[in-house]
Length: 439
Image 1: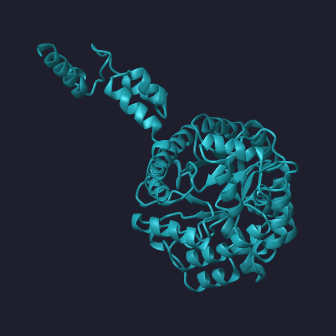
Image 2 (image 1 turned 90 degrees about the vertical axis):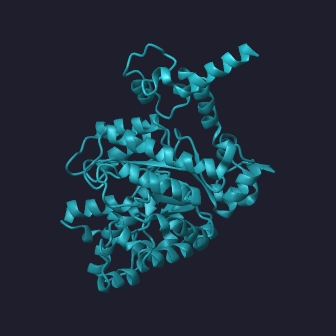
């Protein structure tokens, strides 16, 4: 086994048989063999999110055999544009255990916002460069469709130079798919903002998607900075009635080809997935992605499994995410109670992160077994012994657990106010103790 000398990309080093420092860190944290991890990176079934320009980032591994990761979206909007608020959201998300952050800002000084977030946190950062390209064209010329191909790629390179670790690029939405949707409209059409930017541009200019047409140039930029390309699902279903339809699957087939081209260029990729799906579509969608994209890490938004719960979509998404994770999805994007309603506040971010972490952990208990369930075992033992301090120590949100437990001043501090002196565990312990004394 060789030692790292000069890093090119993580995939290229892995193919050469070299273990990078990032691989060693992740192997130790995930309790996997460094050699097994290296092989998976070489094959493209595991990625490492770390731009070579980032100095203050802790690398994260996403993919086969690793813990299911959680992403948190933050960012300004035209209605709520407050950099300090977004920075606080970032800090709260990191506090409650997010693995990565994405800056989806669409208002204010987009360069400053992105750079401040990158500077302030040590988790990998993702962006969607097409947002900035479209917004700057709109500010300058009055319309998103006025962005040029050069502007799109200049923004992509700017993000890479700033240290962005992964970026969503909607390379799989082609002219063929856009023309199909124009003739065979879906109930919700295209709900991806970046996908819609590109679709509008393509329809206006009657030209192919520049990210697809110039994919080799995109790969050159990604390779220079070792940016992970998150191949975006522009055609993800926006409601369960559009789930697993022709545009979604056609885009996935195109993305499968792009994954292979990226691997040949030693560029790391992951694939983004739906979206809104009925429960019985989730496992099949994961299996499709893993088959078509040859095991590329799968990044899912939810999935959202019902349409009727605005204000509770973090719970709806957690239901879908747990099933997707159990089926093999590798990366979960959180949703908040504000989804479909407005920009999330700090409390929404906290609730969204925790809901997604619960879903990811529940999936990992199935995928990784005892390696993932150690804390659950500790919690079970603490409950069996009525050890509240130990329970709070392993709780995913100790503050909330303590607050609920402490609402009532109990006579017996070893129980909770649900059962009080009729606690099943306490009664059985006393009964067994009495019997033992009589023997």
